[in-house]
Image (cartoon, rainbow, N blue to C red; front, side, top):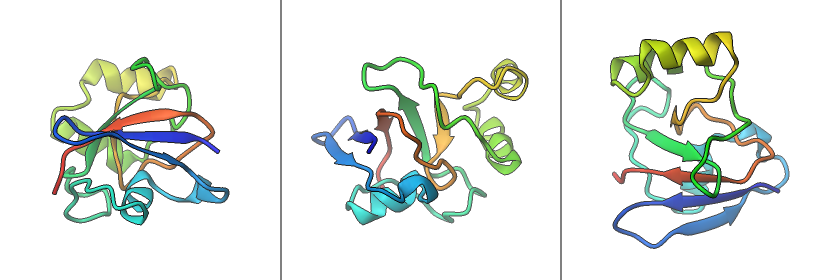
Length: 119
């Protein structure tokens, strides 16, 4: 069960353990389930309002959760969270991005820290 720490600059951290079967749930679905107030408008990867910063628990890069849809890559580029060089690393080298959309990122077997904005 991966440990997920939700962090916001103005609130105490919220720590959860993603239950079995969560490999089909997005970060946004888990946040709603555990009453973490991550901002979102569409919930479908179109608007970018649910952008999150994802690291390992110590603040370093993650190793899993790499798969990004074309829609997610495009929206992250549009809102300035993914540069052309970073996008190339994601696509060519299969490197994870620190920036993701909570409505698109699926939880994997890795402990992660999510920094988010509120609604």
